[in-house]
Amino acid sequence: MTKTKFYYFNIRALGESCRLLLTYTGEEFEDHRVGMEEWKELKPKTVFGQLPILEMDGKQYAQSNAICRYLGRKHGLAGDTIEEDLIIDQNVDFLNDIRIKAAAVHYENDETVKAKKHEDFAKNVYPAMLNKLDEIIKQNNGHLALGKIPNLKEKYLSFKKLYDTVFFFPKIQDYVSKLPTPVYNF
Ligand SMILES: N[C@@H](CCC(=O)N[C@@H](CS)C(=O)NCC(=O)O)C(=O)O
Image (tube, rainbow, N blue to C red):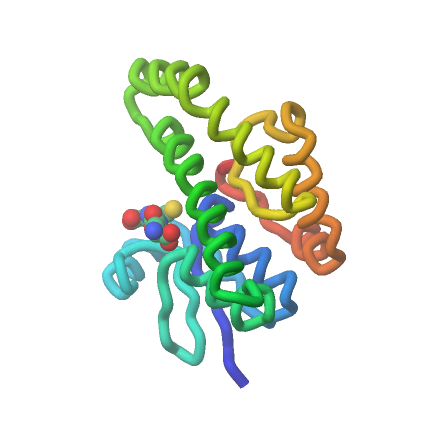
């Protein structure tokens, strides 16, 4: 039997959609949370020097979205046609565009630049992107995926619905109830 091990840091970020998919589909896996000491040793042995990594039968696979697409196909969650796959991919890529903006602020070390970037994006970037995402989730009846950006669930009812859709599943609730505390909430 295939032994599946998922390697990522003890944060949600790029790993959580893979963990949620593994949990939802019932695929048995080890949720391996890599600490900084282990990472120093592991990094040069990974495909791109980054996490997440999915390991199956001792073979490694990288890139969070590629892993999610693979898990979706493997467990019958992909589209019925290649055009449906294209729609899924376009929405995931759009979501990633928003994440990249938020990450640029989150990981900025210079506090002045960080504040400036946040002010700029909050005024000129997020509203249009988040309204579009709101529209997509509404059109898809509460489906898609979302990274963490503060207060979205309060501001956009559709985001709350999407969250409720995902966290409604008993297997996901069970997974969440056993989670270790992430090192930070991102
Ligand atoms: N495109 C990659 C990006 C992976 C990535 O940026 N990983 C970061 C953590 S979120 C990482 O491994 N950082 C540690 C390092 O580069 O040493 C993916 O989606 O999997």
